[in-house]
Length: 285
Image (cartoon, rainbow, N blue to C red; front, side, top):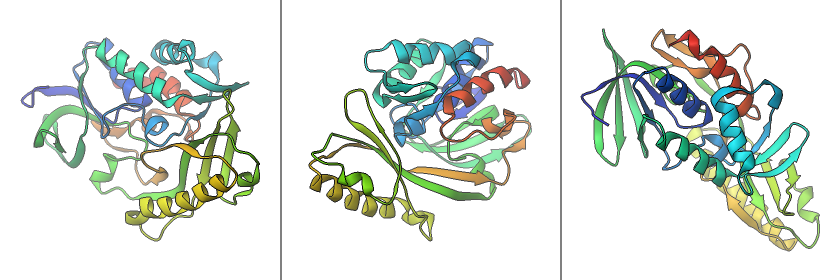
């Protein structure tokens, strides 16, 4: 990455929608910088273990079909499949997305936090902090592909937390007492007899306390699981936060990928959303 370069597109973050957008624009000959907070890609699928996805394979094409097929063909890439419901292996999602980006001309930066966005005449300047320190980068167009509207939030658009989940993988237990836990929103038994679990959490009074509140409930649930002879095997790095936003498009060169979609697909439709998004990317390039 060259901080003196004015990229055609700067995309944050490197979830499935961000990767698909970056691949498509690069294939059209555009210069693209892809940014991400974590040191791995995948968005809420890997960051929040939002692994349960509802997918209509018949409508898939292009890059998203290629990615999906690679995950399916990978050993243990799909941990559960019934009709149009899939549980993804988050580790395989990370690997496949990383390979796709490495085989492209996309510039990639991990461990990045955007904190200021300023529109100028010929470009948009984005201020970032990361391992490299604090620096500015320039892009003709800034695309927010994050699950939590992280860039749009910087334009002072109201972002409202409407749902909160914590997701995890659970080993088998001696009894099913843990399944009576009141906050379980979804539980799916996997091919290897583990469970993928989603707990729907009450919203705290302040977003500042989201992770603290999530951890308290997770600790309580872990105790219940242990009493049943099981254990929580894998916990998400962060809780899964679902937001509503006042605006999805700020200008012609600052917008969220959801502004390109006809319908507001939910958190179980990330792959479907990316498929529709790929069809509509010709609207911007």
